[in-house]
Length: 332
Image (cartoon, rainbow, N blue to C red; front, side, top):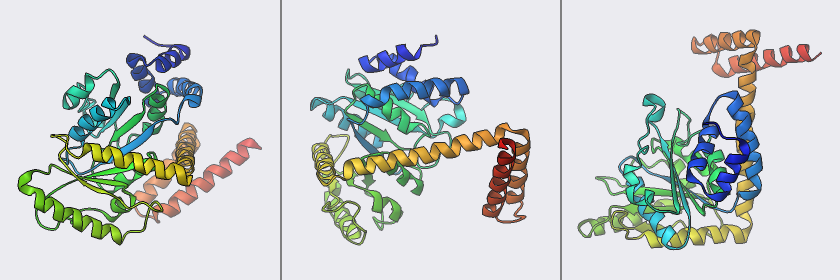
């Protein structure tokens, strides 16, 4: 059944989870008629956005992100907060399914009245997030969710791009063999706001403390992301819900610091500008491919780039020049 923009808007504002899900599906659609309706819906929702805390949660596969989110979400709800989880699924683009489609990995959180869980395909989009994650956040904010938790795919250094759409970047670390800092990308360490060393038990407590010390030493060599903020390294176990209250407090302290310094709204303005730049690129590329002449030129230069006739940057420049020249002639 197709819902009108008015029905979806009313459903979002009333917290109707079914209609919130329908609205997100609309935003994720690549069909032109859906994009037009999605833009109108988002425009109506804008006045009701901006009141949540957006938390990006990253870590290597096996770090316990889903368990952390489930129990952290339940903690936040116990504190009177509404929690939305946007779980980016790397497999969906391949098998059309979703790891969290049945919500079995967050079964207890899914039962909570004040929780909303939405798996979304990354569809090959770099940065560990889906290309419409930012817009999906807007819908969840308009629906009144206080915390937006984004579980990223956890596949590499491009994960740092999640920091471009969130207020807090939380990195989950687990204790491994050998050098504890090995494999941690400098880019992640420079962008991180809070670190949680997960799966800490009594038998590995000393090793966890040593890892915390190593991480703190490494952070001392990193440029400070936020003035007067020393990145906390919290020990705990998401499965046992230990250490989560400390993470909750550190997030509160970090947001308070950013608001007091004026950085909170400044960063959000920059994030919105980056989304604008992203969509400008997407719409221009879409327009280019609609023209048969320009579309053929696009494929020709792409072929030249792949065959290394000249560098990809040169072929891109030549194509853009050709597009602008053709567009100028048509306008004339």
